[in-house]
Length: 368
Image 1 (tube, helix red, strand yellow):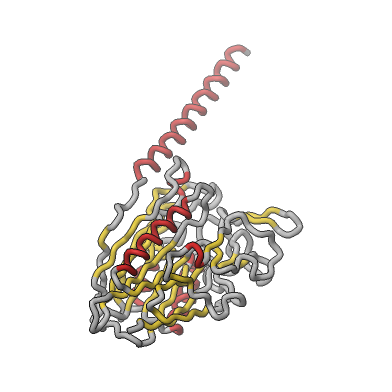
Image 2 (spheres, rainbow, N blue to C red):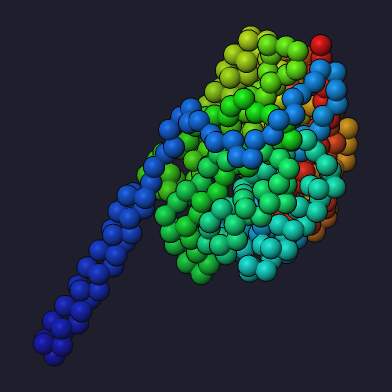
């Protein structure tokens, strides 16, 4: 009997050692894979265009978070949590898209919508280039091919080793970024690195947050249109979003002082211009929602509140599948501009058919 217990203890010890070595080895692997892209990294302009912007001429820009092609109406994401009005807790199910076919379908639906809007500039977030979560669909190539008459820049903001969570549906390894498309000539583009939470485990799972700054010449002037494409943090309990906003505002002020026109668009991951309670739902107000309005922007800058901004939301809670009037919804996507532009915006009601976000269309003119 003593021999049996000794053998059992030995087996348990060996198993524990294997477990410790496995976990330790995996953490070491993630640490080796982890890096941050250097701030102020020059971006290549692919397929450069030659047309030059004109003063007092209407242009259109669209921002859309395509959610790596995963977020059809039936989709919920494992990192998203919420609470129903009756107190029932909710949490999403999936770590990656349901299937390769669903990614292709949702990406095609997004492309159909974007083509109909016929914008001069497209700012697209959560575009995968190579990722387990999107079943290796190269969305970057698919989109640039569909908009072959546009120049493009690529600001990578997610590059991870294999993320083995959730255990039943691992997120996997990811290469993704911000894709900016332009019908007009680009002088240069730069990737700027946002501050991020670099605490031990969080840094492996969050994005390498950034914004891109694209400079476009304006005919007959020495001024530029500075097009800023931003995707701020979504999960934040340590003030990271405040630091990111401070960095962005500093750039806004610097560019305005140079006399430039400034348009900033993207996914701000804040409820914008008072829309945090704008839409009915059967869920409690979620903890991830922070607010952002003009009072927190530099003087001479403001958000372009969509004409239908209190009628059409741009983001749904992804802790449960989408059902209109049930999920919490708000406006987190849009544009802010300097006061030397004329601008108006419209939220595009796609009813979250291909993403957990709806696109936003901006129409603007550069004032003489």
